[in-house]
Length: 44
Image (tube, rainbow, N blue to C red; front, top):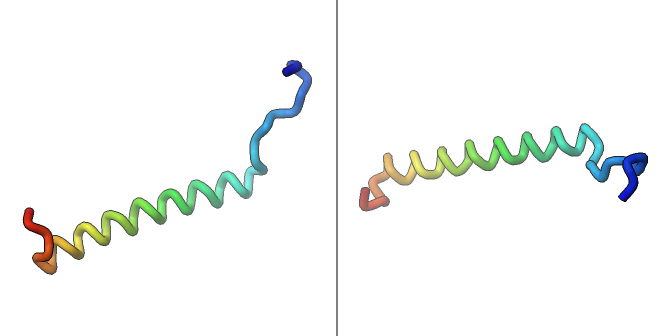
């Protein structure tokens, strides 16, 4: 690979969308864990 080759990165808007989806996934996971804990389904 030459130093002059273009970087193999997705466009900025696609990277932003991926970051937003990652944050949304983390929030959804935390909300699910809190909901399960509040409802008393989890044994902890």
